Image (cartoon, one colour):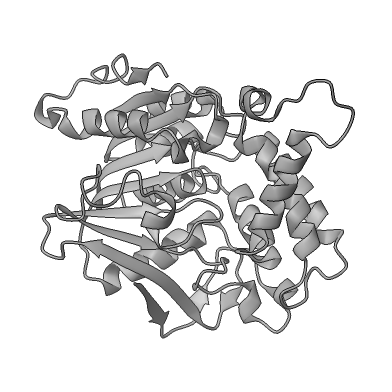
Length: 343
C-alpha cells in the first residue's frame, strides 16, 4: 500500500530553486517489529512498490523475507508514481532540475518522519545505486550495510550521451512539455534506452533473423518496448529523471572521487554485470577499490545492464554470501574471489 509524506515547509534544491510543496510516495513492507530495516532505492522508471519490479529478492521466502525484515521503498522526486513531479505543474516544462543529492535530502526527511535512526541495509541498482551511494556519504553514521548494484561514482560521459539522445527524441515530439504530452517521443526514447539496457549478445540470441530483408525481430522488439512504456510512464518525468541521473557525481564541490568514497563507513557490497554496456564492470571495480570494507560480486550474464532484474539466482547468492560473512573477522578479499558465478 502506498503512503504519502507531505513536507510542511519549502524544500530547497541543490540548484538554488525551491519546491513549494514536497510529497513523497512510499511503501512499507514486512514485520514492523523486525530488528533490521532494509531501505530500497529504485531505478529510473521504478516506483515504491518493490515487489512489482524486484520480486525475485523481496517477499515471502525470498532473500529479504518480509517476516524477517522491515522494508521501505520511496518514489523519487521527479517521477510520475506519486512523489512531486513535473506533471504536478500546469506547465511541466517549468519543473526544476532535481539532482541525486536532492532525492537523498528528501529521503532523509522521510527517514526522520518514520523515526528510523539507523538503516541496516541500504540497497539500490542503477539510478537507485547512485542514490544509495550518495546517501551513504551524506549520512555515513546512519547506514550499517550498503549494497550497490550496476552503478557508479559519477555518471559517465557515455551514459550522459545516451540520456541526451533520449531527451532529443522527447523534444522532437511537438506535444512534449504539455500535460500528458510527448507519448510518441517517449516511445522513441525508450527504444533508444533498450540498446543500453541489454547487450549485443542478448539481441543476437533473442532477436536475430535469418533470410529477411525487412520487418526484423529486433525492430519489433524495441517498438514493443516503447509502446508498452508509454502506458505506464510520463514523458515529462522521463526527461526529469534522466537529467537527475546525469547529475550524479559524488565529488562535486567536495574532494576527489577517491577521498569521498573513503568517507563511507558502511560495510559495502558492490555488484557488477560483466556484460553491462551502460555501467561497465570497471565502474564497480573502482567503487570496490576505493570504498573501505567493500567486496565485489560479479554477475555473469548475456542480458546486459538489466541482468540485475533477471539473474535472481546469482544476485541472491552474492548478497547471501555478503550477509552471512563473519563481519567480526572481516578481510577485504573474503568475497572478491568467491562472488563470481558462471551462468
